[in-house]
Length: 617
Image (cartoon, rainbow, N blue to C red; front, top):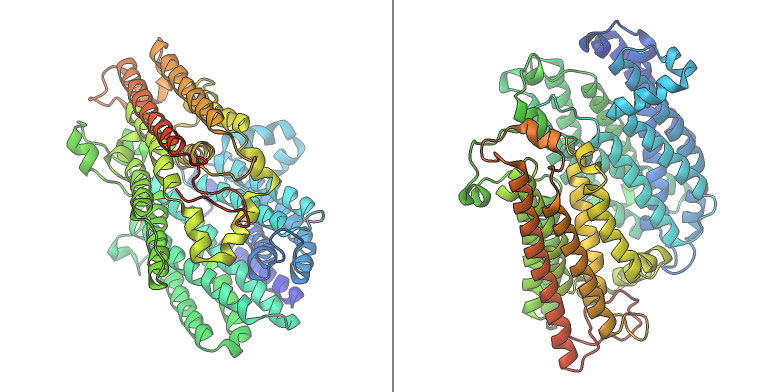
């Protein structure tokens, strides 16, 4: 069966590449260069489809080891997981080779340099990869594939397999996130949608491959099929939603059936409808799951081919379109004013963080409802805190604050503070880990095992956490890195994710309960809080004392009429950051003092395994 899967991937890749070489336009000519011939016109989609197939096989094997047939949470992988880890090396090697090929051919097509020249001139190749972001994204993916393939031979634990899966998924976000250029209107939405679509489709395809392989070996258990259905259902929702967004942005109604791009969109929607049908039948007919999984596999392969074909065509809505200055820099227009009403009412939904915050809120509420149906109590204050944290993330990324944050430094720093301090404090006080242990003990055991792993314990060491927050501040802004990447859309979700993650880590250390002698004592936590206050103050003072604006080239080029003085706006942002950040830290200190005065052990959401006794707040 494994041979048949590889043969199917190769057949889809070859047929698609030939058809695209015949009928699709040469993108080199679209960019104004000479046609580079079939080596690029056919080789690029061929390598891209092979890379996607290899990535799906690698993900499928990692899903088998980490999710579908996991082993001991604190021990080794299952026998099926061990066999899956052994199969990752060839898939990872092929992904690395195909990904590097895509990187080279993408640079060739974009710059107009023959691939043979790149292969004989490493200096030109490095310069080309650095200059063409999509090519750099594929090169990074190739490097990640080498890392995963190499490590898969030495990883034997369940926690290690989860780590490899997360690393591979992180690498797979780079290529789609860098694939959308600033010349496209709404490139922020297009980039987010492409990333979500790619990850969800690969997870679905990988899980289906794992089911097919397990069925061929007779090891497709009911639990494995149930978990696959959960992955497929979630992926279906993401794939469908993320496919609609680019179609609406790229097509007008009269172009749906009159253009090749529109017909490919229709074909993708038909394939999605058939996948929904197969999923429903699989849910009802568990004994027929293997044949239905094969149908899923074929349909997903055809959908991947259609998606690759769409990437080789110019969307009709972009043909001859003139892009304004703000659209080029931000992806969308801003009005010539910024009022309090604008910050409150001018929403632009973030396709990554808005769904995540809503999903987190809904999941939490459902878990609380599950406890109440069982006659168990959950404090309403914790629910309110969690929902407030989710709201803070939503407001920081999707409200008028998120809309203006990409173009106004002071609003960017305001959003940064909401994600770094306000949202983490509320989320930590929501005690989500304790709720998880109560509502789903088996899942809680596995989460506890991950949180007790060496990387997690190292990350939550106070000194390491302090350094991570310092790097997120001074390493980004004081080194000039912010000015170098602020133009690129991928930098904004990356900065938001880093800011939220470091904030959660910090306030877990300050407000989290670590039983026994594992955590900081009360005075140590207070000292940590004051150290963070000094760090925030130092960053704000550094901003206030600067005589030149951060990222002056970017913000100056925007020419926003309501930001006539970049230095004044920067200082306003520094004051907002300092004020809101210190208020959050004061709130954390007040919470610690309150617990201390009550004689508690400074408890909160536990970071350690559930077999440790936890004191209630």
